[in-house]
Image (cartoon, rainbow, N blue to C red; front, side):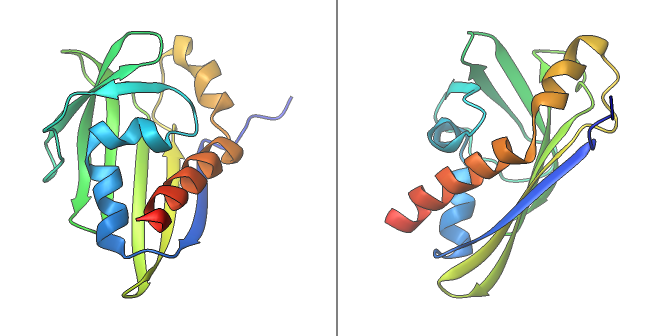
Length: 149
């Protein structure tokens, strides 16, 4: 059996301004609306990410809370976070969103899942199951939300 790629990435052109798309990503309360992994149940309001070092909490579909530690941030262009159990260090995998404006009304969005630093054997099966089609589902749902605005 071949080991899957530990960095999975997909891109899509979205007919919406980068700022509008970024708001859907940087506001955790909006993330369950576009999550293609069907893993996110809810997030409390007023957790909008503003910079590296921010931590936001999500409740997963099976009722467990996860803290997400923001490790990259450029307003309107880039955001990445590493999940952890509440009060614990991150597991070692990372979700990343990069936005590249084409013009005022079009943006190329790249969604990347990187589990190269994930060492917890209990999380490896789930990481392997996070394939390009799951990332594409999130990107497609994000596009549908952004383009209807």
